[in-house]
Image 1 (tube, rainbow, N blue to C red):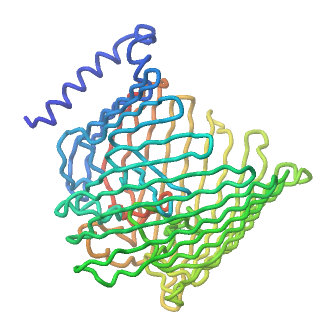
Image 2 (cartoon, rainbow, N blue to C red; image 1 turned 180 degrees about the vertical axis):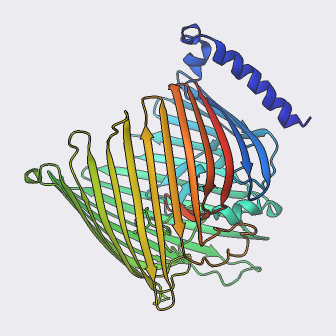
Image 3 (cartoon, helix red, strand yellow; image 1 turned 90 degrees about the vertical axis):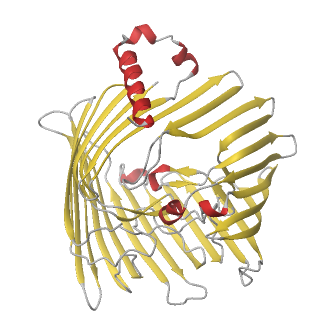
Length: 499
């Protein structure tokens, strides 16, 4: 028996003992006093596409007492069936607060300004792990707030291809250090940041020196913001022609009763950084919502109207226009209209219309157009409980193809503890082959995918979910991070135990 299987069985035994205890018996236990926020998770998966059967176990312990807190995560969790990873400690960190200072050791997250110069965080939904392992010190002084950090990060080649984090196990750990200062001169706030990053680019070592400055002005109903980032790429013998970069972001926000407006402008030139995420003017609902940080400039206007006379109806009007700075053929233009009804007798409706003209889709509608209708409907169910019905129809056409896609989903909240869901997706689009490095990963399009799930949450501490059927793989974005997901067909059972 493998060591990881033995540990998993031990966890099952202890979990069973804990679950068998009456709720009141452990209401005031040591776990409740010191380990609130911890969880134990088990995954059983049978994937027919890869022929993989796997059992994942994960334990996350969160400890807090007075000014001290810490966490440790141990698992053999593998986002993809073909990964092999034994049960081990994957994350651990400690934090201590001393008056106006906080000291973090171990794995930590750190974000500077809007994240263009530094966004060292973990996004498990997109399989992006850019957290650093080291030390972070934050202080709140009378004249400024400051952050100092030093940390390392190490991943493998698979993580690079999946998450875009450009580290490689054969070249050692990435090494980053830097600081940020924020000054508050009400109503004006100023910030300056600096990052010294030595990262691995396949088999080469590269050094990026990043300087950032930002200003925010609060004028009551109007907020103004501007930041600029300079990327100094240190030349090396292996890569002597690395161009310096620049990123700029400007925003104006206006809001009052029933009306809001946001105007944004960006200009990105060679601004890609593995530990930063350039804010995108693309909507997150789009399949490719990440900014083109190496070559992009443009603007977006976003109006939201809900005057009192409209009695709860909301209208959103959005227009975005982006194009390449060097590559003038790289264009993106988006018109978006959304109408939402007020909630009446537990009913709520949303209808939207999307038009993207001249947008080169990742999946191959080259210089085509995308038209989509999204709709959502919520309300009571005659059989009991409440339902959420949603769908999207898209037609992607150009001079060669006219491909249609349809998504339909239904979530039925039978009662407070049981939810049942159905999802169906069809596509006639011929997807392009995966990029080099995405070996064995395909979205399997055209095709049809159907899935069914049951979620049972009897109390705040336990959650069971059974999912079966097929799911489409492909290119997906979350929070500006994009990853290639493999398709799935089979059965997955997940159990969470919260403390």
